Amino acid sequence: MGLINLISLNSKGDERGHLVAIEARNEIPFDIKRVYYIFGTESLSRGFHAHKELVQLAVCVKGSCTMLLDDGFSRESVILDSPFYGILIPKMAWREMHNFSQDCVLLVLASEYYCEADYIRDYQEFLIEVENAKK
Ligand code: TYD
Image (cartoon, rainbow, N blue to C red; front, side, top):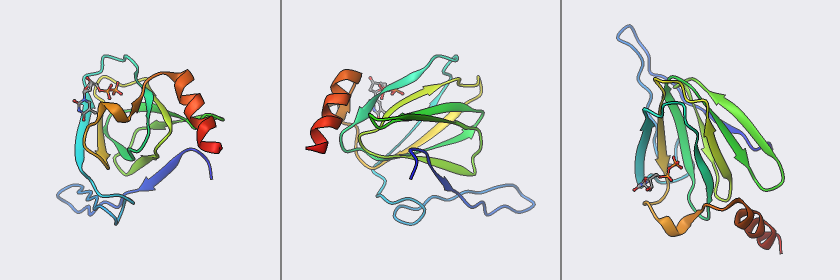
């Protein structure tokens, strides 16, 4: 399986517009403890970290951005530009977000509460942790 795991989100659309529902342990394989959204990014890049335990689903509900994932062996990126799918970001994946459109709103569903200790913000440290996990 590749690094990019897109989850298709069904819209209950009708003549009144679209409605996308995401249920924990139904559309996504984790319980949701936290929701946040990123917007007004002024085209700067974000991310540049991995998480030891956190699993997330990111949905670009408006506009577009590029999500890059790196498992320590290879990196792949995908353009997120649709509210009809989300990208599953597993634990121990280095992520970078680039090319935010001005109107981009990136919704993120997270499996854990915010915890700075769960972050790996140094890429070399990330590679060492990946190596250690193999042992
Ligand atoms: P960070 O995760 O570093 O942002 P990004 O990866 O998108 O560049 O978070 C930016 C700041 O916001 C940082 O000071 C931590 C804080 N923050 C919270 O307080 N709660 C949260 O749920 C998140 C995601 C971040």
